Length: 159
Image (tube, rainbow, N blue to C red; front, side):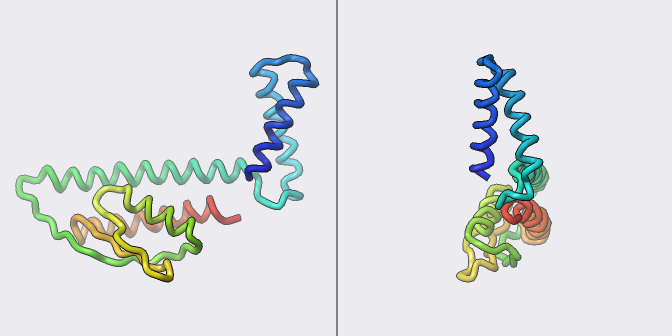
C-alpha cells in the first residue's frame, strides 16, 4: 500500500511537470489520473488497490464511533439511575483474529469503548479477559462490538 501511494504522488508531480503549471488543481488532476492508472494496473500489483484499504479503514472508524456512542449511552444510563445497581465482573471473549496487529487492534478498540476494559490477552491470543461495568448488559454489548470490530478489522488487514 505505501508503494502505491508513493507512485500515485509521483504521477501527480510528473503530471504537474508535463502541464507546466504548479498549482494544486493541476496536482489534483494528476493525482486522479494516477488513481486511474493504478486502478487499471491493480491486477498486476502484489497488494490490493490502496483505496479499497483506505475505505475499509474509514468503515472501521465509523463502526468504532457508532460503538463508542452506543456504549457511552449505556454507561450514562447506568450512572443516571437513582440507585446504581451494577454487577461488575470479568468474562472471557474468544476471537477469530490472527496476528499481533489484529489482536492488538481489537483489544484497543474494546478498551476504548466505555463499560469494558481488556485486562489480559491469553498466551495464544485467542481469548480476551474483559472487566465489565455491568455483566449482563456490558458483556452483551462487548460481544456485539467484538463481532462488528472483527469483521471491519478483517477487511482492513486481510487481502
